[in-house]
Length: 186
Image 1 (cartoon, helix red, strand yellow):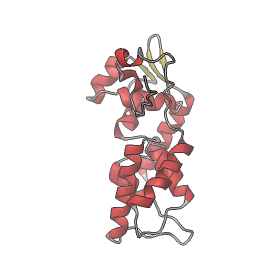
Image 2: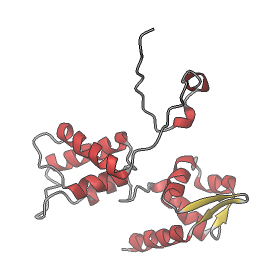
Image 3: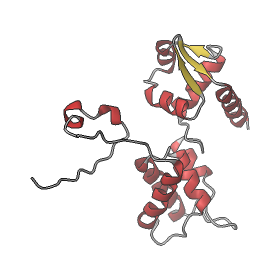
């Protein structure tokens, strides 16, 4: 039999069917991209998305990667929005080079560190309504949407931990929630 190379990508490796995984003598290691790798992906994608526009700065690429949680599809969405805003004249390179990313992130309702509305609401609920600790069902009920993706992101960022009695916000998560509340007031 000829050698076969399989190339695949997923943001949800736990959903790969066991019959496929069982075919491998050695189980593939599936890891998320790092923010540094995401910045490199953003730089490569920018060549095709931002044709004819000034290149973003290295800081822009890091911001895009972080805001997109190093997810290539989300990186492309942010770059496409940057392009669209630049074309209509609402976004021009700064004097220091690169772009001010505030409008791009606002259009996607995401923070520089990749927290979407659900993740921000999750933190707010946990601190302000549940006193820092709650069961998964109680949180999901109050959010009104599945918190699974937000929960994983918050755990990856060190803002949340799972305990035997539910979900608990970390001191870092409390500081981030306070920062979000201060930013919302401004």
